[in-house]
Amino acid sequence: MSSSVGNRLREGNMVRKPVCRGSSRRDPFATERMRRMTSASNYLAYMADILSIDIGDNEVALTVKHIDPVQNPPSSSSNANKNDSGCFFSVPFTQKLIAEVVGTYLLIFVGCASVLVNENYDKVVTLPGIAMVWGLTVMILVYSLGHISGAHFNPAVSIAFATCNRFSWKHVRTRVLIKCRILNMAESSSNGNHGISLTVKDDSIQNSPCPPCPSPCKPKPETPAITFSVLFMQKIMAEVVGTYFLIFAGCASVVVNTEFHKVVTLPGISIVWGLAVMVLVYSVGHISGAHFNPSVTIAFATCKRFPWKQVPAYIVAQVLGSTLAAGTLRLLFDGKQKVFFGTIPAGSNMQSFVLEFIITFYLMFVISGVATDNRAIGELAGLAVGSTVLLNVMFAGPISGASMNPARSLGPAIVSSQYKGLWIYMFAPILGAVCGALVYNMVRYTDKPLREITKSASFLKATSRA
Image (tube, rainbow, N blue to C red):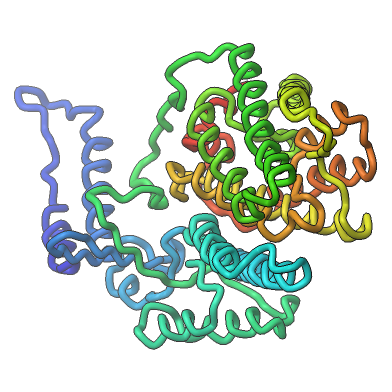
C-alpha cells in the first residue's frame, strides 16, 4: 500500500511553472513556491515508503523503518525498502541493557529480601506480604522501564517474544547473559539501529521522532505547560501539610502496633505508609510537586529539575511538618509505655546505611521514571510511588526502619531527643536519591529537552517553574 501511495504522490510532482499573465516578467516568488511544493511532495512520498500502516477494528499497528538520510535519500524508494533495521524512539541498545540490568537487580533484590526478612524475623512479612512485594515490584518496574527496554527482566519472556517474531533473536543472547549475570558489559557495543514495532490503541501517535523537514522552518514558540500561577507560599504550605499527614499516619500505625499487641502487623504498617504517599501525591502533587522528602528535593535540584533557590525553603517545610506530626503523636500517646516511633538501626550501622541507600535509590529511580518522563503513565505516578514505599517498608522496616526520608527520621528524633544512628538517615537517603535520579537519566532517552519533559509531566508540573 505504501509503495502505491508513494508512486501516486511522485506522479503529482510535475508542477506547472506559474506564469504571470498580462506581463512578460515572471513572478519573483514562483521559483521558491515551486521548489517548496516539489520538496513537500517528495517528502510525503518518502514517508509513504517508510511507513507501513494496517488499520484494524480497534487498533492501528505502525511499523517504522529507519532510513539513513545520507546513504538512502528520500527520493530513493528502492534503497529505503532494503533497510529494515531501525528504532522508533532511537533508544541506544546500551541504554536498554542498562535498564534491564537495573530492573532485574531491583526485582530480585526486593523480592528475595522479603523472603529473607520473613525467615529471619519471626515471619513478620507473612506469605501474603511476600506475594504482595513481588507483584508490586513487577508493576512498578513495568511502569518505570517498560517504555525504555520493554521491561522483560526474564529470559523466558525475551525468548518467547523472539519465538513469536516480536523481538530480535540477535538481542536475546545478550539479555539472557545479563539476567544470568555473566555478561561482560565492556565487550558489548551498539550502533543504535535496532528495529521495534509499536502498537497504538488510540487515534494519536505521540512522542514520535520528527523526520527531516522538507524545507527550513522556524520552530514554534514554546508554550508554558502550566496555565495557572501558584504562589510560592502555597507550595510551602502544601509541603508542610503533606509531610505532616504523611508522618502522622505512618508513625501512628507504628505506635498503635506497639501499644496494642501487634494488631496492625508489618504488612498493615506498610500499607498505611504506601496509601498515605499515594493519597497525598494525588492531593497536592499539582501544587508543590509532593516531595515531602529532602532527599527527593535535593535529587531533583541536582538533576536541574528543581531550582536550587527553593531547596532550603522546601527542606525547612518538610522538617517542620515532620516535627509537628511527631509532637502531635507524642501528646496523643504519652502513656506509661514510651514508644519511640523514629528510626534506629536494628543491626550494624553499615547494614542500615547500605539498605537505606538501596531503597532510596529504588524510590527515586521509580519517581524519575513515572513522574518526570512524559512517555510513562504519569497519571499512575501516585500509585507507583506509593507502592514502592509500601514494599520498601515491608522488607526493610525490621532492619533499618525503612526511612528513605531525612525529615521522617529527624522529626521524631527532635521530639524524643533520641539521635542514635541519625547520621545514617541523613546521608544514605540523599546519596541514594541522587544516584537513582542520575541512573535513570542515563537510561532515559527522548528527543525533547529535559526542561520540557519536566513541564509536561503530570506529577511535577508545579515544580518545573522557578
